[in-house]
Figure 1 (tube, rainbow, N blue to C red):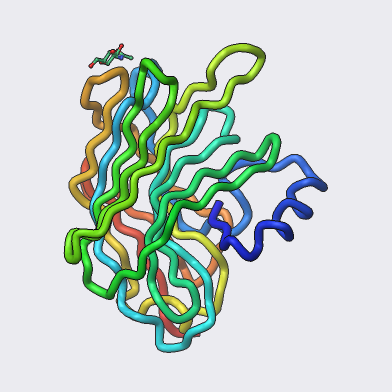
Figure 2: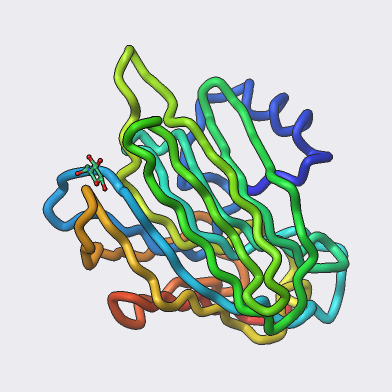
Amino acid sequence: MLVPSAALLLLLAVAGCAVAQDPAEGWLGYAKGVNPSGEGIITYIEAKWRVGSNPRRGGAFFSPWFGIETSDNLNLIQPVNPWTGNQWQIYNEYFQWVPTHNYNSEAHVVRPGDVLFGSVSYNPSKNSYTVFHKDMNDGWSVTTEIPVQRSGGDYKKYTIVYFVFEKEWDCDQYPPDGEVTFYDIKVQYNNQTVSPQWTTAYVDDVCNNRAHIVDESTIKITWDTTN
Ligand SMILES: *[C@@H]1O[C@H](CO)[C@@H](O)[C@H](O)[C@H]1NC(C)=O
């Protein structure tokens, strides 16, 4: 989920009406990764990508992002990189479907071509995750700690990795590059580096937006830029 702070009240009203979960409405192309052994929880993930070119036409709100998700698809921790209508930003986000809750960290404006680095690390002693997001070009970073939600007394398990392009707009409102590539992806389950088992899909079929597994540490999302 990608929620601009100003839209939170609206979101809470909408989400309150129906039980929903991820992959949610508004996700375009995405890749999903799981541990091939089916075991363990995510203890670390990192990835890099480059900020896209400015869209030819402004006004849209969308983002490429990656995140980790609980096995019930109801909790999502994500370093996001939204185009907010007239500029690019980075911040950390936590979205919880039940009860509906969204947290956005402090945000920072980034420029086209900047290299972004995001990571999420598990803190076993605190049952929490530390989210780190950095603009490698200007050195700005933000760190956020997100507690793991409990369900029926047990801590939920973050087992799913998602690389996503989110939110539906007209094709000429997306970056004219037509692609974003997440690279140097590293994933650990129970402290062991794993090559996740990747699959690709989409929720909304918009501008032919699709995820592609380039290799075990590279995922590209592509789209059409003309209507
Ligand atoms: C991962 O390593 C840390 C210490 O570095 C340890 O406390 C923790 O129990 C390990 N986690 C798992 C799931 O093996």
